[in-house]
Image (tube, rainbow, N blue to C red; front, top):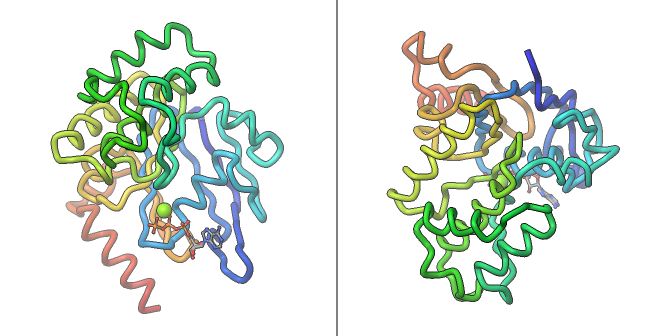
Length: 241
Ligand SMILES: Nc1ncnc2c1ncn2[C@@H]1O[C@H](COP(=O)(O)OP(=O)(O)OP(=O)(O)O)[C@@H](O)[C@H]1O
Ligand SMILES: [Mg+2]
């Protein structure tokens, strides 16, 4: 079995807040892994640590064979990232932004690839519009595109569906499900539990920085359980001590 991501006792404290508290996780190649948890449970902090954007306070994490603490730049070079609530630079057009990402990531034939994405996510008419003048969902289309433009072996994506309309959510969901079929891996944080149940192969539930559960979705459904109700009962039980 090949692991593309392994966290061991991974922790992050901000002052006296234990944002992530000794979380251990393993993600196999080809997984569509869902990271679930209530607001403030540590999902974004996990993704930031796993992508070298913030230094863990303790523990270890290896992503695509790279130690995230020792070589955060190396990790960022390999993976695709959709950060939480970030937008592309206001002063570039959509096309310029993708050209910029192509240059940074050394992507050959970037114009053809950008064209494919403009068509695929249905925003070709916005290619020459400044990012500051794009709608929120269109900016999210750009953020989604930049994460997958170099077809990374692993993409870590924080709430990628949140600003998309129902049609675009379907398009993106199908894309993610197809992406992992070729052995590439996705690590996704989401609040949309129905989507997680539909497309994720395995998942983890965080609550107040600690890992409550991790396992395959199929195991849950095989015993007649559903992810949304399982999530709610587990988190409520933990909340009530
Ligand atoms: N830069 C920071 N400085 C101080 N505290 C932070 C910082 N980033 C996150 N935290 C705290 O860490 C905890 C986990 O936050 P995080 O953003 O990881 O949660 P989340 O699961 O992504 O939540 P949401 O579902 O709302 O996006 C929260 O208590 C938050 O206030
Ligand atoms: Mg978050």
